[in-house]
Length: 69
Image (cartoon, rainbow, N blue to C red; front, side):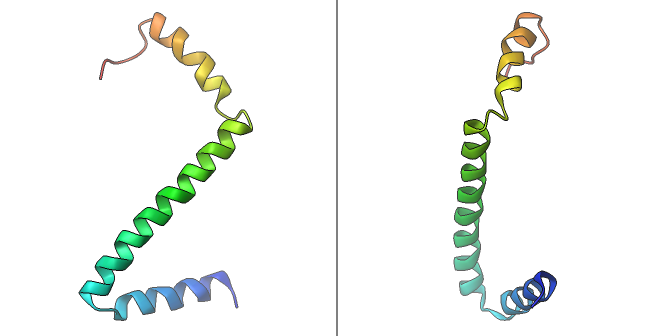
């Protein structure tokens, strides 16, 4: 089964659930999605993927290339 077919099946299933089930699914998916994002970020940090940005940030700030929040 192809990934496209799997996604199409999931789309059909989501479209057929009740509003209550959709709310439950939405909450679960949001938590799941953030967990995946967090894991990817942690892997990128461990691999040094963000080191260049971390090194550049203090220089940008000192050079007034940043915007106050």
